[in-house]
Length: 101
Image 1 (tube, rainbow, N blue to C red):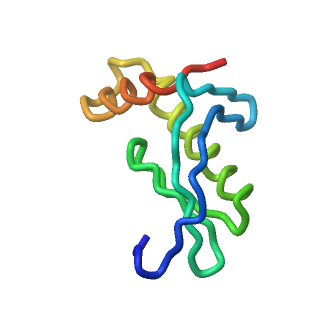
Image 2: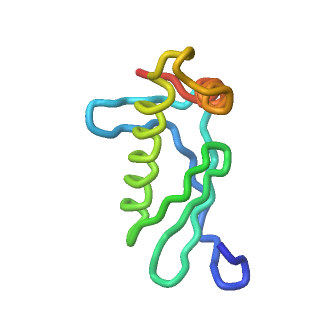
Image 3: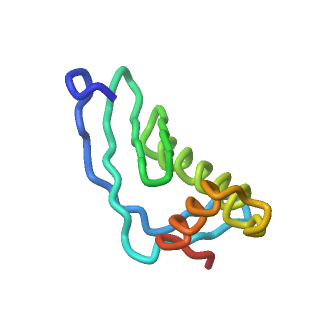
């Protein structure tokens, strides 16, 4: 997001992720920054390569949950021997921050 055109709206702390049947919890509160630009709320979570948006903050948080759902089911839940080195490092990084309830 271009800092000249967007406004940082608020700091938000993620504590849990709930999407469909998946329930994850952050080991510590995880800080994200929410921006507003052109009628949409945005958040970039560089640690997990997530770039989420929504028309409302609630929509933005749902998009973040959906992104973590994808990461969990397509990387974290995969056996280590089936992951390439980059994906394996990413998986370890995610597990440093998040666990399944």
